[in-house]
Image 1 (cartoon, rainbow over the protein chains, first blue to last red):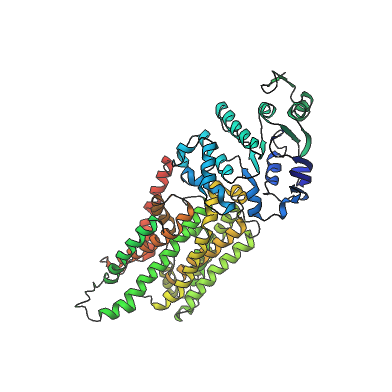
Image 2 (cartoon, chains in turn yellow, purple):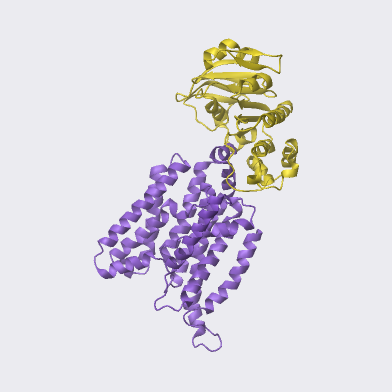
Length: 241
Length: 317
């Protein structure tokens, strides 16, 4: 369980209380500036809260040594920047850093899970956007973390690659990891998340299954858009008025 | 030891004996009078000093480029070399340089002062951008004070001494400088080598490095200490020698898998090779006065830098 208790961070997050469960996909939604990335980074242990705290399986996250925290929480930022043109395998191996080992098995497993085995010896900067996104996720998986925290992992991808990456994330959740995604596309959150957290101006507005967290009233209140869902469960589309 | 280290170590082993025999007077061990004395007391310390200074600059350049994730970064960016130069200039200004130990000690003090100033400005946050700007500020302040010292030099002799010294050289150095610089540079290279694994994590940016458990503040201070020792000691015994830290990692990178950690030791060896060869060449050139090593490397470095920029424009870096 990864939980925030009265988490406050500057004026970006105000008294946020939520408890995330492993084995499911949780989406964090909200308009620009709502504090989504801030919440994700705080839960990854990268930002010091001004008040409140974060609990990981009952213990305080910020009391954990950084290496221990890094073993349990994998963080994937929005930026797909790779500074040096290293081979794909070397990049994925960075995920083993918190463990301090060079084990080939988890790295191979991560490469295989994301269908990257044929790319292992390619140079990182020769990859397309979709391939890079998969390599960066493989880097997180190689660390075998209990939690995968990803900031808008679908942002730079086309529809096919978005669905592809969601399929891989679902597989990780099915294997027991807690998957937490900042998502802008509400239809993805509605159709692919098991639970949705809605933030508005730093405050928690909803924390519920997608059907109730992203109902018409909340969308109007938070995004200021009159819209409604059409289609059957799992294949819904948002239609604006 | 990786392939790049082997290549540059082998080249260095070839270059060392050549540099011992090369000079204004070519030494033939069989016929030159006092050959052993010349080699032991003049050429050998000078060659070792070139190796020590070059190794420090090469390793510092590789670490700096890894830390800033920028192939155009140079160890001079931290302001440590200009700080060291200012210390030496102060020693020359007051005429302390007459005592052999005082000039390098003042230079080391200047480098330490630059590091302390960096700590005071940007120490707690550990942010890369703030730190780089603080380094630029320290460099520009040290540069301005150096220019002030030159313009207000007490006499023409002091002024010419300062200007000459600023164009780094290894002329007339002895074992004393080797003993002063070598331990400091080795310690600095060890610190930078130790930072290598953390630099690898920075390949994916600072937030990812921190999420992987890297203490970025500790990394920063490890780098400042490593660059302070390598560059500070280099400036203390040889003056300002530019471009080595910028050029060398580019020569090494294609021979490695491009991880920053794989560059530190081979860059030290390649830096040693570059400075040793350059210093041998300036000795052999048939000029009336010896071309200053710092000037020679800058003449070599500027077109190299231009080439890098052109390649970057084409997107091949």
